[in-house]
Image (tube, rainbow, N blue to C red; front, side, top):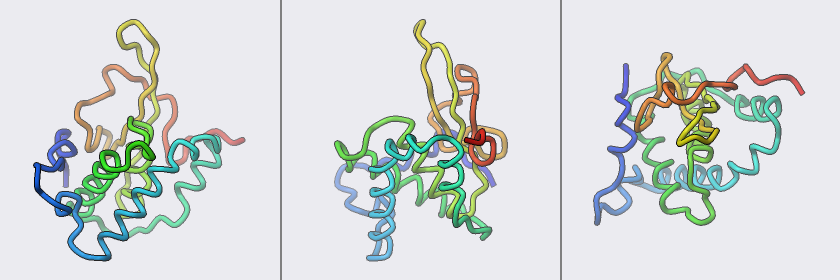
Length: 161
């Protein structure tokens, strides 16, 4: 099962789409969206925990259940919606998006990794994070690997603190 790099951008809503573009069809979906929104709000603060503690927190409670394509698409739609609708409480950018997407995709049972990398863009050293599945970027607009070199990845490569 594979998803194209551009899949994430295709979950963006058209005007007047209502709550359906977020995958909210009932109260249960609404509660799930609220959880995604709450986690996205906390994402920048979670980064202050340090790599080892953050790795343990992110990996706690992971299920081994099979994943359907609709699960990943639902997570992507909710994270995208939280990023758009939650501003200014939800900070825009790859850190919030990557951490939130990773947390909920892992709980959906998808064996993804969250990579943090550094690269030179327009002459400046910048950081970026992205989701990787089966060795390639997942639910990303473009492949970040030509620009960014991965320096840390979750799960399991965080140094002990």
